[in-house]
Amino acid sequence: MGDIYVKMVDEGDSPAKCREARRRRIEMRRFAAVAGDPPSRAGSPSRRAERKREAEPEAASSDRANSGGEKRSRPAGDDSPSPPLSLAHPSLATPSSPSTTSSPVEGDAAPAIASSSGQAPAGEPLLAFGSISLSGRSREMEDAISVRPGFFRPPGGGSTLHFFAVFDGHGGSHVSALCRERMHVMLAEELAAAEGEEQWRAAVARSFGRMDELALMACVCGSVGYPLCQCERSGIESDIVGSTAVVAVVSRDRLLVANCGDSRAVLSRGGRAIPLSSDQKPDRPDELARIEAAGGRVIYLNGARVHGILAMSRAIGDRYLKPVVISEPEVCIVERTAEDECLILASDGLWDVLPNDLACDVARRCLEEADPRRRTEHPSSGAGGSAPGVQEEQQASDSRCSVAALLLARLALGRKSADNISVIVIDLRRG
Image 1 (cartoon, rainbow, N blue to C red):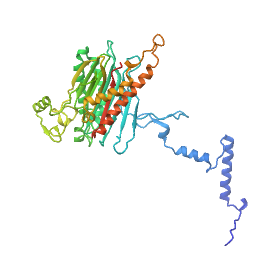
Image 2: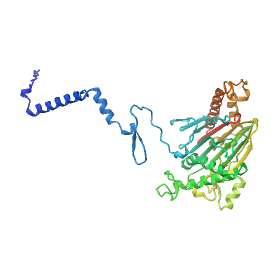
Image 3: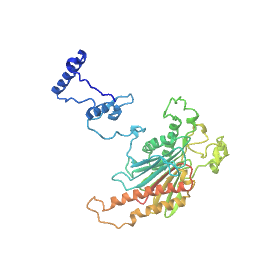
Image 4: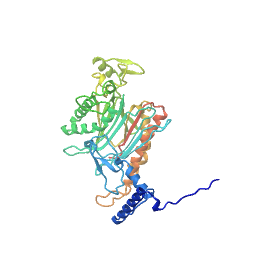
């Protein structure tokens, strides 16, 4: 094995260029020391960390201030997470109930799960509710839920109104998503213009008509309004998209339900299930007569369908089936009674496999533990104070509403529902 020799080269043997470079490095280190920045080796941990920070994307430490790409830096040391992006218009932002979303899972467990629960704003009678949306065995999630407690207060005073709605989309999700963001706004505007509760039916019908007009101007790409979008997706892909809408407006003494399509609202009163809406199917005698009078046909192809395509006779959107498919809702207004237990709103993914009586029975059993009429009254804690345990009971009621909604959805899954499943359960024992 040969020996290895290492020859040490002193400064006198170094080429002039190397000596000059070495001198410059020494001068730079001295300058850094005088300036108060201690030198660091290129390979040291601190230097590597500094390079890593410099290489991180600017987006991790800045917020985009406008659509043109201008950025606004965060204050130093602010480690708070960036707010999530929202597709909703800023003017539509309203307080909403807490919600959770899970990632897609395989098998029978439903992907795209969203659930929420909550109560009325402070100062108003308690109103507990819970909701859930499951994509179920469907590949696409086309349902949308809108829960807007305290969305409208009559100008002349009176009970605050609470808005609940289920929108079951078909052909795509952009119409149901548009309804979720805009329907309560349009309804509030129409109610504000109505002179008294006797005009509420007309106000609701106008809001559905406005929502339909907006949906007809919407494109799958997200563009809404005139001139109509001319992108490659603006043709039949946008024309075939629509949504049902079942809306409930709850006040202290009334329930208003408006329905367009085959989603449904069912009231549990005194242990009985009372439907507050009627599914608008093409083979319903009055709807069949209306369709034929408008020049349409009902063809039986895997069930009764308008022109052999749509399995409901009324909907929001569906440009290609106008004017046969209309958006005019059927409105029902009932007085609340002491026997009222809960109100269930759901898409046909639930009602196709669960009868009204069973759904109400399941919801009632879930809410029994949270029934405020079963508790022992406690003396109040003072003038204007609340009774001990009221807050805990409210939280329990919210939880039971969410449990009821979840259990109903899972029952529908167990009964082989092939559609999206969206459920809202409102506890009418409170508020």
